[in-house]
Image (cartoon, rainbow, N blue to C red; front, top):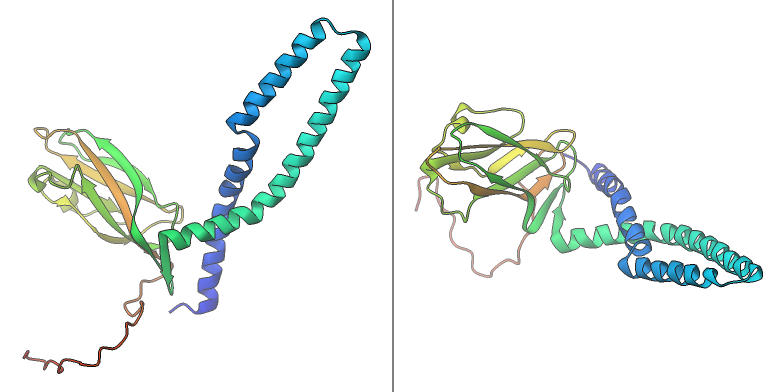
Length: 241
């Protein structure tokens, strides 16, 4: 059983791993937004038109103005980058609280999280598709759900399953339908989606969802305890009522 210190370390590593991408998104999203590009284009066009009839002193003044503008842009960009780091960390923490909740070492999503979507052709052959649980942690145990089409495709026409370390032969034959369950992902948080559909079927959209993930081994005693109801039913005997 993991202690609180190791769980906190896992959460910190997960935050640090996701931080660079979020920092870049926050920083670049402001620096390169469409409004900035339009303003920059207008400034270049205005300067170009003005230079056509400008005198040498005016050209020097214009060049000096552009040099000052570039210098200011570099300073502002650098300052915004340093602001983006704590901002991105706060946004990631806020997103986690919005999407789900930690129960000891298990993160449970409020609503299932879409991790992969594929449009699969019915060929009769076993096909594999890569799936990355990039919001989890390396070597996590994940619970997943697969939905084929709208969830009403006859199960005898296909089999769809997630595979981590072991492939079951039953998964390679159509007729099992969509599997839902849990398995351990790899160090790179990757797994494979196995899909096989009978040739007489039609193409289907296959979606893979993550329900929760656990850092380390799943526990069967996690979760909250509700408020005790005043009346408790009598204990059931081993042989029933």
